[in-house]
Image (cartoon, rainbow, N blue to C red):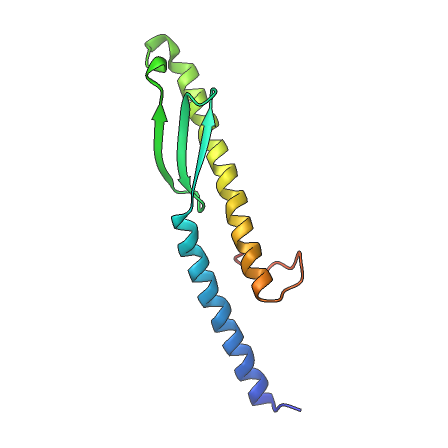
Length: 112
């Protein structure tokens, strides 16, 4: 049977490992890109899997004053599409990390 000190040291080591893996996962999520689109691809938004917006592309055919409201709606829809994809990609990466830790499915660590 392990002593209390050994169990505490093992728990601290596990916590440090988890913290390191979380930091690595967050850095990885910044390198993964997703693209949201709206209007059949007339408006595209690129974002990182953490949700940081990288770029917006608007087709030239939409650059008319009378199309302003539609363009605004399409940009909002493309942002939402990109955010949804970023959230899904982030969840996938976090599941991979949790699986690597041997945690049961559905177990949620704070911050994950």
